[in-house]
Image 1 (cartoon, helix red, strand yellow):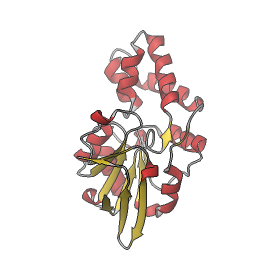
Image 2 (cartoon, rainbow, N blue to C red):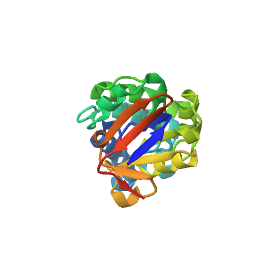
Image 3 (tube, rainbow, N blue to C red):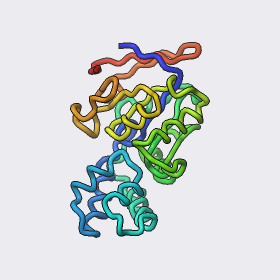
Image 4 (cartoon, rainbow, N blue to C red):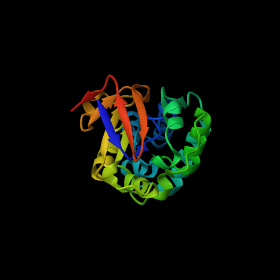
Length: 219
């Protein structure tokens, strides 16, 4: 299947980088410290800004203060933070003005994880610090389209979480999901599902990017 787009917006964790072990260790530690069910907290944390996870599970706590604590734990935990298959190659093939990273991580955390994984810091990046409302709000992906000076309908999103898929769709974009964090049956709202970016080949044309998805499942 060939998809055509003018610009690509990548989520970071679970799309470009495998950071799941570090994420889960940090949130497990935080949840136990405050007496919450770690499994429930971790499930909510994937794909969302940490401050929004804290507000949802612990409304009685000072979310901004706790967010600093969680961010510090995540930045310090770099064990197992590596680039996912195909990520480096794909980023290197794309013109710098045709893609952006749109992540729920803060800017310091995003920069740290990209460095740990050996991936370049892109020219265009939207982080938790740049939006008022995180995913599943459309705001992060609309900001990404704005940075690239591209209409939302002309952008394609790569995501790994239901919240991210809903964010991309709410912004008026098509979404390709990666089956890295959630099972396939929780990603079916996406237009297509692939196992990794290694299944994506690009053909850079005048005014557009053609993407060939191998081994993909489509809805």
